[in-house]
Image (cartoon, rainbow, N blue to C red; front, top):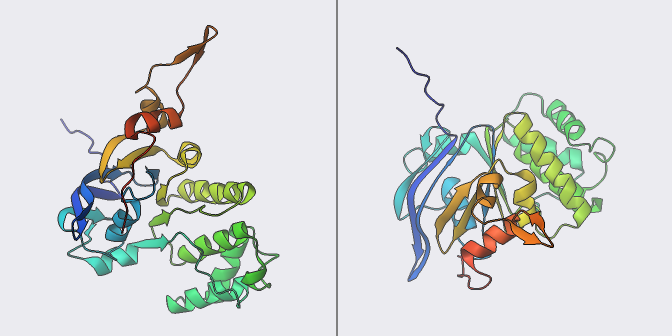
Length: 261
């Protein structure tokens, strides 16, 4: 009798620790991210989110523990990891002097793709930027710059993308544009790990949510599973289900964050 084995996760983190001097930022983080899913790492400022992403993207070495990304150990095979991922930081890294299309062509050439122009045109169309492709990126709105930034990170079709605080500083309309972009990435099979401190962002996007607090994962589950951690409240005899904000604040408290390096 044979049994079906579940596929290996796109990302597996076990016991990751990281300190900067006497500041213990990560104190033993464990998590798995399924292939083709959106996984939200939710936490306050200073919880350790960016530090973990920097370790997973080979920009920083962990003090202890292991991390495997797309089947490659981040410490033993960093080159293979870098070929399998893309990282979009908290602020759009576009050249504002170049046009949107020129930004994309530049990255495609740096990745030694044979048809950089065709790659740029396909991505402009995919991210609804074709009409703006001939304009300088400095004239773009915040949401457009962010979409261009994500488009640039997808050149070469990386199977895994890290989005570190992807909507920081954006207005509500721009945030929705980025959310739609992230949803389309997962629908196309890309694995997305995003960090956020915005509860509604995790609620809107994530298949699974892990709450990182004081350097450890204190809860990890689907939105429905996390809501079950609190009983429904009753107001005037009407049952009210707990929101993700209720769950988050109940678990980590309303105050007290650590400084993150």
